[in-house]
Picture (cartoon, helix red, strand yellow):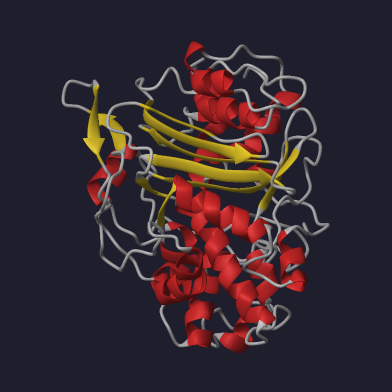
Length: 404
């Protein structure tokens, strides 16, 4: 399916890096046939890992809209991994986009456990002068669960939102302070704590808080507190101005208008790491699988902070496409670091999606880790046309495969 209405339907979700939450849209929408390129077959009734069905979810790659795919599934019933497309290494690194937010939240929660940060204290206390004087108090905890009410980003970092704009500006860079300063020229979106709206500015502020409290760079904090203890060799925060993607990796491309009006592919693998703590990190499927497993098992956080990862605030969502679908539509779906998704068969999973131009990824697991999945796709657009692949991968991985 590739109609204009379909593309428009998912454009907002792609831009926010929240494609997976929309998986439950099938509950409220009319039944739709899965595209031939991503037909997903439901797993066996007993929930065993259906490797043949998983292989079929990426059998259509490459095509005009996705040039590569990497999937890794694990759990009690063993593991499966697969790749599709030219030059997609199974051990390849990729840009993880907003999955970076989980690392940021974990570091903040660790500092809270050490009593170096108080989740109930305000941003104004820790970072005086960062927010306008007429803003109400915003707590650290409200940053992590996206109930701060801070305004979203501006055109500073996204231009007109087109693939051409990004291809032309992929090496541009902004500091966290510049990104936040640009956003807070706008009024608050709502009173802090009264609603939830997924917002990357929250994570920029959280990253700045980490640096203020620790006296070290955010990159050093992630390395010392998460990557090194877990042996994550492919996971790091690129330096400011760094554009390369070192080591084995699939390439990311965008389709831009050519001189004859036909689309041409532009390699955007090398791009600025300006999203930083909000979305600039690099990792691999094996590393993300290890990180997610360690996080769920409590290896990174003590019980009190671990509980925050699986506690969603009881507030409505505010113009937040992430939480407007499925059985919890209209309510918050983010905790202090993770996203909660209820799949069509009722299975509840926790994790996070991430997107950077040329790269769309996700990591999700059941709370008991009986099944977990990491994926990375290489879409050529910015409007979410890779969604049928995401639908097939995730629902099939959790044994709730359903044609989109």
